[in-house]
Length: 329
Image 1 (tube, rainbow, N blue to C red):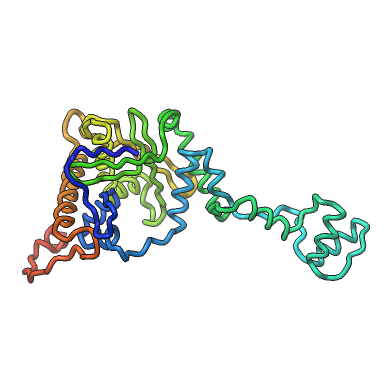
Image 2: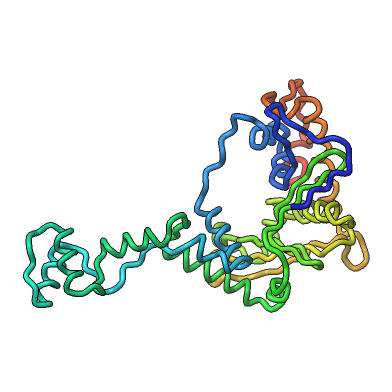
């Protein structure tokens, strides 16, 4: 962890904890300060429930960036081998076929009989217990999800330009820095001296026949990924004493979560063809705005139990505020 603390004061909540602004916090601040407070500051907030999509993303990141840890953290659900004995009837028949005499109908006793005849016999109950013992603490995936995780990971690692970046670097690097008294934090997927890399999955097919390239572009815009690129570059530049305009290059690696696992590599640059990149400039303005919004609300309301809520005034609705009228469509 890098913690640069050259500036002024640290924002501390009423519960004594230190707060830091993250990329997800910036996304919530873009909606409203109250939403940010509810999701990041409220001392009584609920911890978001885990979802299959989040688990898929964690597993994919480990498979690509930390393959040595992947098998220790994740596994496929138990898959019954062919020829496994499952029922009491199957156990009794197998024992008879081996020249034994089945005793009783209690499954436990029949399992002991079968194992006495051949310890290599495949018995469902025994295999399931062995599977549980061997995979304690792991996240278990259904077979279809497991296949997709490994397929997407292979597609990413097989990309020559991405493989070159992944050949040497550091995974899951956490930065905590201070900018003019405001703590900022970022958890970066992969960093090298030349690159900051972030992996993203795209679920295609949810919008009809939209192309994969359009899905990628839509995600960059509507999910605020362009802001993330600038914010991460800013945090890393503060930590390393550089400049987000001239520091390491920022790269998104998008992969389709369903077969055939298309991959797109998209770099976010401060300039293009020697001119200012307007998307980068928009990200810079929005990130700096959110930092100031965070600062003003933290100073006014604190970072504890007082909601970041403002009394509302009655405002006249203007027709230019209605998209269909404002844009003539």
